[in-house]
Length: 412
Image (cartoon, rainbow, N blue to C red; front, side):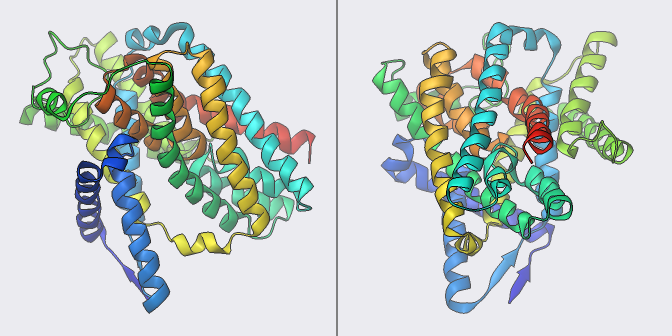
């Protein structure tokens, strides 16, 4: 029997999951030591409880997909609204190098998936499904390409396989990023972990724009001073971004400019921010954007993990599980030996490696949550928070779509 939660019950459940995750990370030393994000910790417990209830009593819960999507779009809009061109230039050559590293990994991810599929005697396109389509691409890309592979290439069950693979990646991406970064930081003596007292003092000190270098999403628990007027204006900006995303999604459908809705939400934020601030000279309230962006990020991840049906992973064929296991190992090794090294083998590079694990196996929100867990413990990484959100949310999807199209054109 399936129970459907409306938006109100879904929001209540997501808040409970977040509070549970915060409690677990605070009380369980292992989770804190290895920088497991709070939404991941609470969400996995909720998913396991859901699995047990389904296994013993046959009950399951369906949450509000519309509310989950709304929070995802607000999160991506917040990335765009924080992306003024002056700030983006600070990424410099590091942004270009990171994009090159990402592009190479996407190609490698597909080579691993398709190569193992061939060795295991199954259609190489199933390896592509267990490659960048679902892991770098996430659930949205899995849904879009799954339908194409079923209709145009005859891969039966491609959509179901894609959703299951994306679910696996979302979980693993949130698990391996923190421990990997911690290992790199400790091995190379890149930073010293903050004490609980230092973290509490920092979080309770309001952010001051005159003394603090502002970078979006860093220190999500830190106090930010905003007013009702700031909040109302910022909500209007978010509404504008989401309206633009809805308009452009419909307008670009079945054209060469067709992009996922969340990409249009991000693009709308970039355009709105830079027109208002650069052309009209209207002040944008970054702290308000940050508050709403962080809240949306946490709620989206909680809802995504709350809606997981882990029993669906049991339906994965053995060969596909072998491929996904190999992809996990490939991601960890690439982040440690390529991403970390080409980005400078310093603290910023370790945080970037954690972020790469997040969107290389799961999604951009997972990448940001991974980095937040690290910087909360070890300190700021402005470079990582400048590069990862924009790369993971915008450039990666364009690069991924291009590589997938090339593979389908030349190798299928």
